[in-house]
Structure formats: C-alpha cells, structure tokens
Image (tube, rainbow, N blue to C red; front, side, top):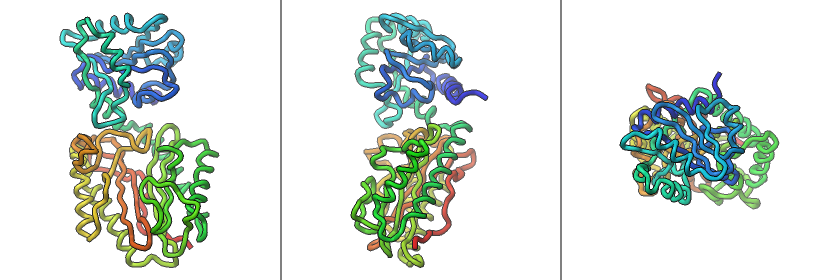
Length: 394
C-alpha cells in the first residue's frame, strides 16, 4: 500500500499536467517555526535550509535542498531526483528549472489572494525567488499555483477519509464524555478543561488553536462564535448547552457541533429552532454536488432558514475540512467581500465540507449544529453521525 505522501504526490502529478504549467514548486526555508500549508501533503519531514520541492508537467518529482536534509528524502523513495547543495541553492535551482521548463516557461508557486492554505510562499521567499530568476529566461515565469494547491488539499484519498472518520469517531466519544459530566452547576470552563484533558491524554491535536477549542456555551449570556468558555457561567435549567469541537487524529481533523437542552423535555421554541437548523442543513446537502458553486449551496440553506422565520446566519454554510478544521479551498458561502473568490469555485468530488449554522433562541442560548459531508459523483454523503432529535441534560 503506498504511503499517504506518495498518494498525494501521484495526485499532484495529474494536477500539474492538467494545469498547463511546466512545474509546481513549494519553496520554503526553516520549517520548524511554520511553513507552507502544502508541505505536509507532499513531505513527511522538516527542512532547514532554502528548499524547492517540485512536481513537473511530465510527472517527475524533484527536491533541491540542503545536503543535510537530503537523506530522509532518499530513504522515503518518494522523490525521483534529489539535488543537494552546500553553499547556496541558486545555481542548482536555476539549472533544474531551466531543464524542466519549455520555450514559454510557467513556474507555479503557492500564491493566492483568496485562500490562506494556497498562499504558502512567504513574501520574502517570493522576492528571493524573483531575485534568483532575474536576468534569466525564467524571470517572468512565475504564476499562481492556487488551483493546484486547492485541489491537492481538497480532494481526499481513501486513506485521508479513513483518518477523518477516525477523528469523527473520537470527537463523538468526547461529546459523550462531556454529556456524562455536564450537570447543572458545572461551568463552561470545567467542561472545556475536561475535554482538553482527554484530548491531551490521548495525544490528539486540535483542529484550531487550543486556547479556543472546544467552544463551550451554556445559556443566553455566553459568548457566541469564537468565544472563550467562562468560569462564572454555569449550566442551568432551561439552557441550551452547545459545544463546537475539532480534533486532529493521524494528521486529519474533525469539526462538529452538538447541542443539548437542560431540562426534562425540549420546549417548543427550542424544538422549532432545532427543526429549522436541521432543515437548512438538509437543504444545503441536497444541493451539494460536483460542479455547483459554493454560493449556490449556501443560498439554499440560507433561504430555507429565513423561510421558517429565522434571521440568516452571519457566516458561510460550510467550509472544507482536512489537515485542519478550516482547510481552505472552495467555500459554501455567500458572495461577500471577505470570502474573495472562494464561493465562486466549483465543488469537486471527494472534497469534505461542513454544513453548519445556528440560531440564538431568546432566553435559552445558542443552538448550533455542524456536520461533515463528503462530495460524491451523485451528491454528498454524511460522514458524521447526524442527530435526529435534540438530547437532554438532566
């Protein structure tokens, strides 16, 4: 069975060939403090000196990197050609690029004005690359690799989906843990700490920054959105208790929201909000299919909610999930300035999205649900275990 890295490199070969460029290049330096988001997809190692990892239009994989970083790549067997250097990368890099580029050279690098996960080359490294290419036949060759980076990250292999299913299963177990300990009088912060202790004990990662993960809300006075759980807000009868949680398992994330009502039965105002949220999620799922623009999916979910008498949500209906909870690429969102062109990008098969929205119920709190779905040739399938009713906390 090929490694996940090799699977993604094979995928990159086809994407580069289809993109009409000579070569796609990930150009990085000293990755220990953070690096190009594409790098972990094609390399299971760190790099120290300036490094160029390339996939050519003919399918060749080439790594130009410092001599002390070369051996792990040789051992991996994932790279067709390894070009180590000692004093500087400029000359070996130019020689490789000149050899793989045709008469009208096009070198794709990770720049994007809309997608942070496809905008991995730093400004300094881009400027440095321009300096290296200056005065050569390649000096006007740089183009955006946005389409390649988005597709490579977004289109999940079977192994990637397996890992995400495991992350979802572990997230469900954490929801069960929280529900077992969430009792009247417990603070939001206590449940937050409980979940984090279990995540840390199992060696899992966090789908977004640890300080704000999980999001825990109880009642009408809680911070909605990306708030911090409170030590003073406690679970009380009549509250909606809400958790938004994403964990990273085997390098892949979940992102799911669940709610409970604190009481003996779910009142009409809460059940009505639950039904409206679920109807909007169903409406979005019914629209989601390869080729549709993300804004069209969002519009259907938004219309469904408003038609039931609720205000529209102030965010996208869904985003992609993968290595991180917010994983870039096409967005199931409205055509708002803040989202750039991502809502206009057609959805592709094998991408994994959330479908999420919520309603603030007066006097009760925030009722939000979030599911994970995978795009299939015919539509989409739910990866998360979607609830059919709102559970109770005694």
